[in-house]
Image (cartoon, rainbow, N blue to C red; front, side):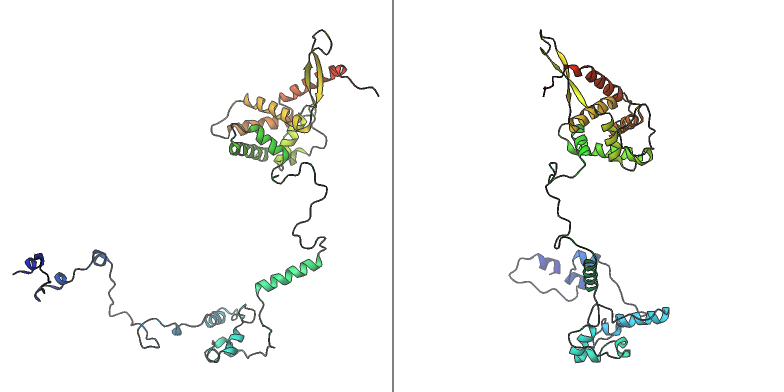
Length: 334
């Protein structure tokens, strides 16, 4: 009976295959081993060295020590061997405790005579110890007012605008809130960053003597170096001091009177920036992309500093109307 028919029979025992079949028919290797790359040893290759157990393989005893290799390289380059005394490992203490290690210590340690070191003292200095000594020396030299605090304690009493989550400048935070639409704070922060970037990369402005800025303004060449100051200067220069409120029946007979009402610093900046946004929206868009809005606002801020913006006329009209309506104010007599 042929071997293939024997394999197909369902017998309670497995019949032995005839010996005349080839080896590949007896043992079928898996596909991963049949496709794996094989490396054959040629006669030109050197045999593997014998280890201590007389077995072929790699033996680390044939390799030189790291310090011996560094010493050999130092002799060739002329720089000298490694400085073992300044290392962070107490090698000499380990050798003194182990007799076998003392016999098999590197040649570099055998060349140098063993120095007598008192008990409990190490002949090395670690980097951590050096840093600790440096910190102690610095703390002794400097005059530290509050011991135990990395940063200085806050001055008391705390200011009214001091908050735990205070992160940005008050002007930047207020402008970001005015730019934000539909609660998209990330988009508003990105537009504010683009506005400040345009102010930083723009050329220094040219002041107009007919439109003076607020007192204490820095020179024009220094404004691009501080874009937050640049934007604050432009907004505060055109911020109105008051608003006009119409009050009916103040003069009798249902006639409305124009009464000027003073504004706080946040109200002034809000009104000025809303004027700037209105003027920037009428500018022509140059180019495409999501940075067009920020570029128009930055150009309007630069025009305000240079005195070319129409926001100055709106501020002047409010102030003229307020001066004319100051007689409508009622003051208490003392």
